Image 1 (tube, rainbow, N blue to C red):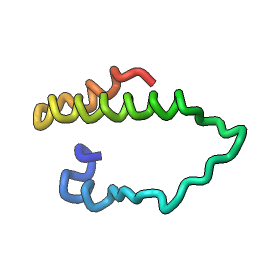
Image 2: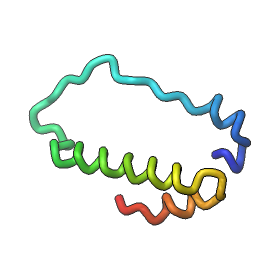
Image 3: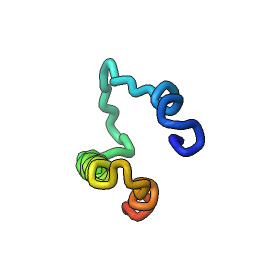
Length: 67
């Protein structure tokens, strides 16, 4: 996104909003195991971003992260 729009415009386009509340539903497709996997994946993204910041390798490294 930053390559296409530039860093300033990309920052204005991306908006993160927290959940106001969470309601667990039995039979939900996300399990506690999935939640832990998501946390690990977010940590991987943060690690790759911080270690490659400014080097232009960020997208290439993200492509290698397993889902």
